[in-house]
Amino acid sequence: MRQLLGFLIAAVILSAIGFMLGSYQTDVYRKVLLWVTLALSYNFLFGIAGQVAFSHFTFYGIGAYAIVILIFQVGLPLPLAVLAGLAVCVALALAVAIPATRLEGFYLALATLAFAQLFIVVLDEGGSVTGSAGGLANYRLPDVFGLKVSGPAYTSLIVLLMLATLAILWRLDRSYFGRACRAVRDDAQAAQAMGVNVAKTKIIAYTLTSALAGIAGMAYAFVDNTVNPPIFGLQNSFLLLFMVIVGGSGRHAGAIVGAVLLYLMPLVLSPLIGHHHALVFGVFMVAVVLFQPRGIIGLWDWLTAKRLRRSRAA
Amino acid sequence: MNDFLELTIGALASGCIYALAALSYLLITRPTGIINFAVGEWSMLAAFGGFLLLSKAGLPYPVGIAMTLIAMFLVGWSTERFTVRPLVERGAPPLAPILALLGMLVVFRETVSLAIGPDPQPVPPAFGFGRLELGPLAGSYQSFFIIAVTLAVFAAVWFFFERTLAGKSFEAVAIDRRAAALMGINLRRTTAFAFAGSAVVAGLAGLLVAPNVSAHYLMGLPLAIQGFTALVIGGVGRVEGALLGGLILAFVEQLTVRYAPVPPGLAMGVPLVLLILFLLVRPTGLLRAREASS
Image (cartoon, rainbow over all chains, first blue to last red; front, side, top):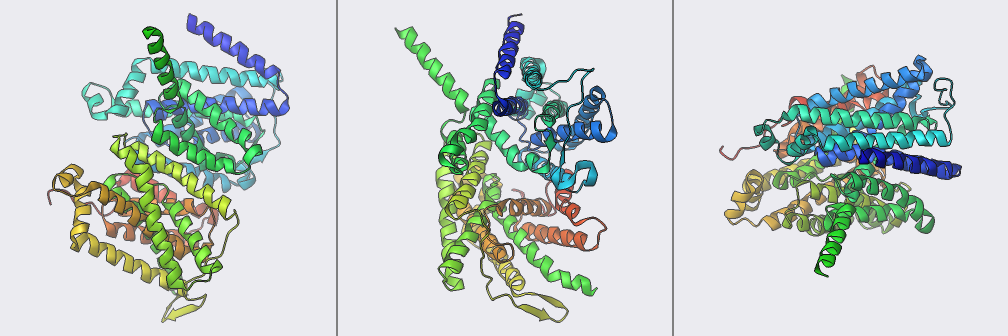
């Protein structure tokens, strides 16, 4: 009950912020929310289930392209298009997961990397369906049951999406499934011996998080009102990985902190030091792995533990 | 048929470049289990070394190449010393060095783009831009040079692993790290040399391919992807596998571009499909690694 109240208050505050922003700030705010959503689900896949997959951002792209193609080329109404887009994401995720999760460690990384690159090749060569290299543009979100959703209302929708993703993953993390995922990550053989169905756990974790990424992608499609291949390139897959690691992998709070920090860092730094921000980014990443492997959230834990000890001593 | 022969030298040359990139991964992966995604960036660094020393400073070709490769040796050695060794000694999870190297990829790339600029820069070939014809086989001087150098490198590496004590110690570390350490093999030195050697091989690939593609700060990623595709095809266990994988990849790529009825853009997907197929059907690659017992 207290949790539900917490989510409600967060929803009200985060949506209220959306009503106070100008157009540029709204754009940044929506993207921060979407990155947080993505980082949360990627954190579950990478940090909790332990799968080093580079395909997460690709499913964001698949979701975005799917909804645009389904509405404006197939001609489905919006609710049906959302369901059909979700079905596309789940089907593709299963097609990747069933064979790929059998692969160990780096081989999974390589297979998903190849899948991510293949997606870009298909987009570039998709002719009028995907709009080739130029992508698809000049479309608007259709009315939902006669209502025009735009401006702060659409921002609120993204807030709800982010909170729903957090709630789903939060519950899952504390369920049998979440514990099974952690067990498989730490030692697959031991987990198997304890009666966990390793293959099924891996496949469900991959498919579920990829579907969540796909839904976030559908929301993204109407933020910029354009989808094109460069947006969904490998660069952003790496960025997503860095966000989770810098924030603290395996922790929901870590994913949130990492996503906000790394998305805003270039925006804050580039007026000050120009293109050097990319270098700062790389150095930051290496430093975190070397000196603070549990991420910023680990630093926070350490500080609070220290304060607790001091207050006890006093 | 003539068509095919025309294509052969070019395909062999690009296959050799992929093979060198694959070898660069293999030299690190085999003894340490680490996949170094920054291999492509090492090639890029060496290509810019070639630009600075050969095109700008105008040094003679052998001198410029030698100086670049020595620099690459130091780059590889210090990468291991400052980003990998601290993690291994602390007992960090096996993923940590891979992530640190992924971060180094960004550091290498952005340093070059800031120091030299984002424009492509020329690197001269070894013997000018002429064309050589050997009976029905024809290709540029550089293609023949790439094939010769690659074969020499693979012969040397093969000799090192099969015939020298130091090479045998690498193989021993690859088969069983713990047992190797107990037999008195210095793990730290082996790992450091694995990285240094890998950087030299990657650098060579960058220097050889640069006359065709120009030195550019984004040239690393395609090379890195082709390299590990070749590695997966050939198998991560054997040096010959890298060469075989590189050549197979290049021929499949060139033959689809030439003969298959698909648009050239889609042909770019062929190596990716090949990679996925191999990972699913035969993740050990064509050549299997030696086991401890045999």
